Amino acid sequence: MLWGEKQIIQFYTLKIRLFLIVLVLVFFLIFSWLYKMQVVDGDYYAQKAENNFLDVIQVSAKRGNIYDRNGNVLAKNIPAFNLYIIPKFLDSDTIDFIINSIKLTEKQQISLKESLNSKNKESFMLKEHLSSKELALIESRMFRLNGLDIVTESIRHYPNSGIASHIVGYINKITPKEFQEKKDLGYLNDDYIGRTGAEGYLEEYLRGKNGKKIVIRDQSGKIKKDGFLQQLIDKKNKEFPPVEEGNDVYLTIDLDLQKEIDEIFFNVRSGAAVVMDVDTGDILALYSKPTFDPNKIILKDDKNYLREIFKDELQPTLNKAFKQFYPGSVFKLITALAAIDSGTFTEDETVDCKGVEEYGSTSFRCWKRTGHGSVNLKKAMAESCDVYFYRVAKKIGLDEINRYAKMLGVGSNYSDFITDVPSGFVPNEKWYRDRYGRYQKGIALNTSIGQGDVYLSPYKVADLYMTTANLGVKKQINLLDRVLSFDGKMKYERKIVQKTTEISPYSFQKVNKGLYSAINDPSGTAYSFRLNDIMVSGKTGTAQVASKTSDEYEFEIPWELRHHAWFSSFAPSYKPEIVVTVLVEHGGSSSAAVPLGMKIIKAYESLKSKRIHAEFVKEKTKMEAKRETLFYRNLKED
Image (tube, rainbow, N blue to C red; front, top):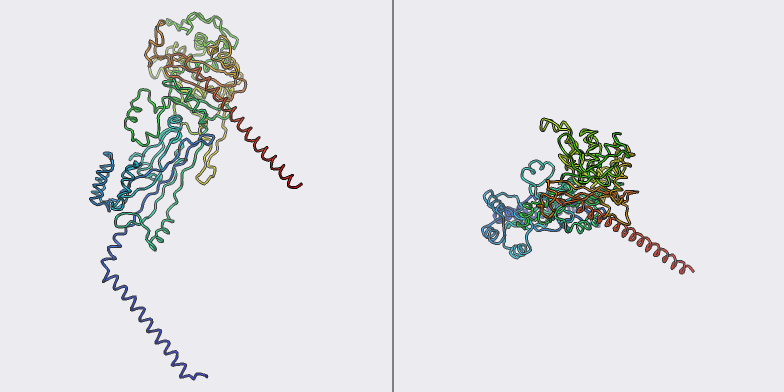
């Protein structure tokens, strides 16, 4: 049936009326709901909104790990539980719990008191590194404690304790003054910062980029999730710069060799050893004794330990490899090069040593009171004849010795990152005139044998002997092998950098004959300690600390007045691979240092042989597996 015009109008009029009725009902329901929220339940929702508190918290970036050249861990991060408080939400019960149940330092007690007075809304760390007992106690009562947060963060851990503590270094809290200076660089007021060793040198690589985020707290101060509001907050948090973990750094250090040196130095009271790769300039080992445990310095939970190491006269936290000492006869290398390279002496020119050299009214004695007889360069280096070097000093003077010392690198550091350590000192005539108002020519004689106002560190001596092993090619000393970002990208890779000194390679060759003879000729000062299977070249040294009478035995002299014992060497002699320098502080004579150096060289060779064998076995296993796969594949095809 077809509808007429009147029926169509009536139908649409009815639909419009029904729509209007539904619309009115919807508006009525919305109005009723709003009325209930704002008028009837207004106080309830106002209180609920007030109880929800938006808090902006700082997010610390993880510090990068430190590894040795072979991937062994030297420093890493482990979980730590830290106690944060939000002063706005603290109540009397919670405050009483903190005071009575948590062990706080005086500084932490002051921080708590100040926060209660200020009623600061932002959360802050009250105590870090909660003990397991404290953690269990807080968690068991957390449901009724207001304004407390336990945040899992990371703490630095050094798994090898003191074995590589000086070269790896340690971190500790940033000071208020440092924070003011570095806050624009992204540091937080409770951040850690690298202090010594690689932790300090490589701070920019190791530290990450801190961040922040917004969280919702309920009426007790606990972080909560809140539906739609949480979605908005999550979206807002994405606008903050992302937190970036620090880079992982790989040092040139060989941990296995470092461990071997630690065992070799077992009976040494104080000293240092440095091992460098002649070809690359890499530091393979850098050891100082006494050592210290950096884990205890960071935690600061053993007050007696901290008190002991910082009051110990042997200064365990001081890196003896970088400390400057009188070098004694290991310095004769420089004097010998100055004599030969300047043309003042030839290698065959001889000096008659009668055990003493007169200069003016002063007698300069040789260590061998009966004398060495006729001595040329080779014999002078082998037997460490003092008179030979006194004669050199008479002819060339102090300024020439100073000039050659500088050419070899004394007074400057040629390294990738180790640039703020003492670089050695050899005086010149001007220095004496400026300091004392005059210069006496006899000073040059003392300087020629590494005494007087001459200071070198084991690290610098190793540098000098590495240049000598390379016949005048000076290698940049490397501590850092490579840097990988948290996502595996290469940020830095060690390159071999070198420069050539102005000293002729032929001069080094002539001097090196004497270094070889010092160990391998029967008259050499280190002949009795030579190795049968490895040719070693080097120089012994005994640096006088205080004068003694000829009839005094070493054990009768107080330890702190005994001479320093030195030994610096490279091996193998014909194609040097490593330089080894050893210092035994107050060791008495070079005989205390030479055996240690020889053991280090043997340990290096042993580790090298084991690794070559392990690599051979690995490759052989791969080949056998491949051969076996091909065999079964051929059987299957047949």
